[in-house]
Length: 167
Image 1 (cartoon, rainbow, N blue to C red):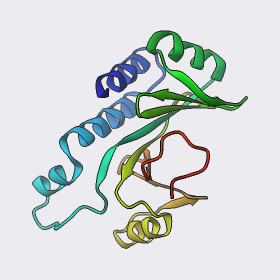
Image 2 (image 1 turned 90 degrees about the vertical axis):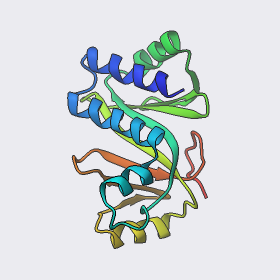
Image 3 (image 1 turned 135 degrees about the vertical axis):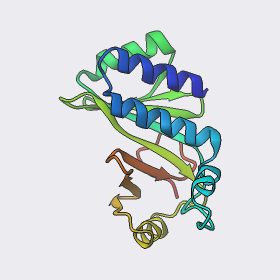
């Protein structure tokens, strides 16, 4: 499952769809999921008792694309992804238990990536992020914040593609 996501990111980089920074951030996200974020954090910082959240898996990746139908057709043809829902401005495609979101944007690249975390509750998440010095952005029931390089991260509950967010 993770290999498909990695192959997709490398292909996007090779085709000029992702910058090197976006590729490194995406690969870092995959490594963090596989290796276990809390284990990595403890190995680097023995003073830290626990991680802010427990990432369970990579929930989804969202890409900015210049032409949603063209990208939809490409992912369907070459990776066998199936359309879950689409509009003129976006397309959500299934990838096993995960999904890929395509958003129309003049500047193609990584929009954000999302981790599923334990006990997701937006108000609690925002408070916890502020408590550890991060600057969360909340849109409805979605919570976003930036990693150290400015790549947008989202956290969510165990939802798969949904226009309404997890409870």
